[in-house]
Image (cartoon, rainbow, N blue to C red; front, side):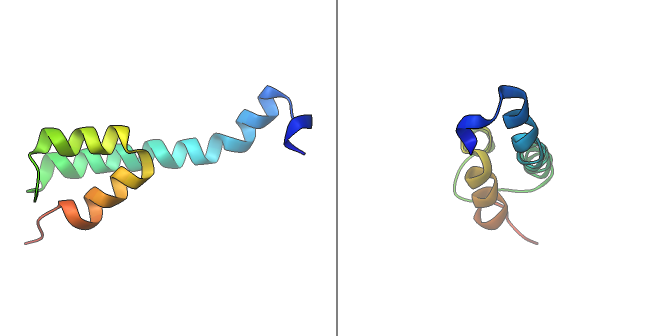
Length: 68
């Protein structure tokens, strides 16, 4: 099925996932700028968020933030 898709159709298929990924990264970076962090300095968390993609964002949001 995937081998019969054109490049444009494949991009249309992945577009919602790309939008979710970008939204999650932007939200995580926003929370990073506002919250206190645990375990690492903020610049390390920034690298984890950007290069870790969805998993890096979720790790930061679950264990990286200090809750008041």
